[in-house]
Length: 334
Image (cartoon, rainbow, N blue to C red):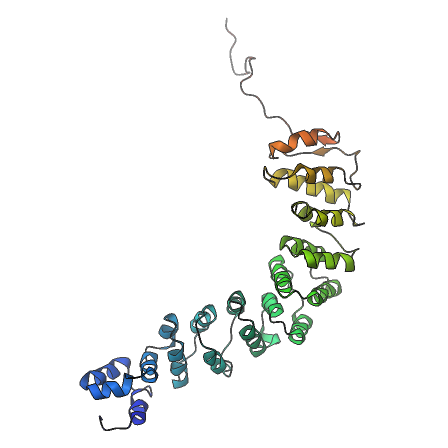
C-alpha cells in the first residue's frame, strides 16, 4: 500500500467503507501511509469527516462537514442550526448546501443569519426555501434581505403577521436598512387586510427609536389610528418634538390621554420629567368635568404637580393602624 498513488489510497480509505478507527490503524502501521492519508490539509479534513457531520459542525470543521455530506452522510437539522449560528464557516459550504433539496433552514436559522449580519446568505436562503415554505414569523428576516421583489411576493402570499413581536422585527429591519418604501408596503398591507392595527406600527416606530421613519409616517398618514401612540411618545422625553407632533394629531381622545396619564404615573421612574406629565394634564382632549383616579404606586415627585389640577382625585390613603382610639376588638377597661 505504500507504493499506491495517493488518489487510490484516499479512494479506499475515505469512501465510507472504513471507520475512523480503521483509518487510524492504517496510519499507525506505516509512516509513509500516515503521510499519504493525513499528511496534508486535504487528507486531514477527510479524516475528520469520518466522525460525522454533527461532530464536525460542533467543532466548526466546515470543510470536513462538506466532505462528510458529499460522501453520503445525512444532513440533520442540528448541523443546519450550528451552521447558521456560526460566523467562521466558508461560503463554499453554503454553495454546496443551497444545491440540495433537503436543506431547509427554519425561522431560527434565518434569524441567526440576520443577527450575524450575513445579509447575502440570508437572501439566498430565503430564495432557496421559497415563499410558500417560509413561516409567517420570518417576515423580519425577509425584510432584512433587501430584495424588493421577494419582499413584495412574501407580503402578497403571507401578509403581515398579527403578532406585535413580528411587527417589531419588521420595523427594526426597515429602520436598519432605512427603507421608507418598505414601511409604505407594510402600512398598505395592514390597511388592506386589517390583520394588524396600524396604530401598532406607529407605536413600534417609537419603541424602536425609529424617529426619522416616524416623522415620515406622520406626514404621510396623519389621520390613522393611534393606539398607545401618545403613551409611547410621552416616555421619549429626550425627543420632545415627537410628543408635540403626536399631541397635534386630530384623533387624540380623552380616553387616550387618560390611559397615557395612568401609565406615566404608575410605571415611570423618579427621573421622569414633570414637564412631560404637565403636557398631558393640559391636553385639549381631556374632559375636565370628569374626575380621574390616580393609583397609589405613582412616583412621589409627581404628587405636587397632580395636586395642581382639580379634576385629579388623589389616591386613597391607607388605613393608619397606629391610631389612638380603642379598636373594636379591644375591651374597655372597667
